[in-house]
Image (cartoon, rainbow over all chains, first blue to last red; front, side):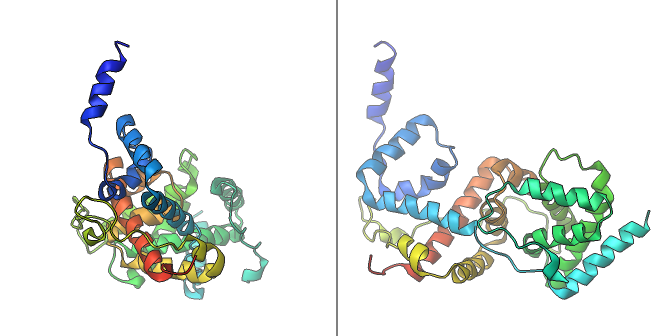
Length: 93
Length: 214
């Protein structure tokens, strides 16, 4: 009990997060960079807010889709140049 | 020439390091094909990254070539303490910075302000214009190639610092520690850049795909 009192007081002084603050904390949340009390506030808000839950899901989806982005293939010109680089290096012994 | 190489695995769930190690072994054994395969795998990201530091594609291609030459020469010293990819990117960024016409980075955040437009929230800070649904659209109805193209275009519109972080972290899937090493930035800085970049990608997806019937 003695340990819990200060924590309870600290919590009651902390105002709940609003949606506009939530969207700014999403990355810190996903990166595990929110200190515990903030993470708890974040999750408390999420539990009662379908829009912020959706926003978080969309950030996760965005990250997933970014991971599937394919970048351009090697052009024939670059392939030739880089093969030359390799042969130059081989020739260096 | 290119048809000899094995098809790229879809959805690549294997850690990239394993396959790089295999290619590295072939490369060390003097197999030119191993080199070309390695180049094929990383060239797109290296070129993108280089382009973020220098002004033209021609210069970026030179930086990539310099990087490969430096990597080949340093091959004996590569101990595999970081992944090959992280090692390559670190060499590349150092080269690109030396070559780059742009000044070496100082504190990057010229782009401030909220990541979601303030007009979307009411006076109490709650959503007034909530996020439009688009996840189902992205998963079920849009061709993966088109999505990839869309995200590539958006990536190119990001400020350079944000683009570098999103490219390394989310496209190339480096750890945050590796991203910080490659770009020589702090964890906190990396998170800010990642936050801003990702928010723009999300917004682009919402603008493109949102508002569809669920």
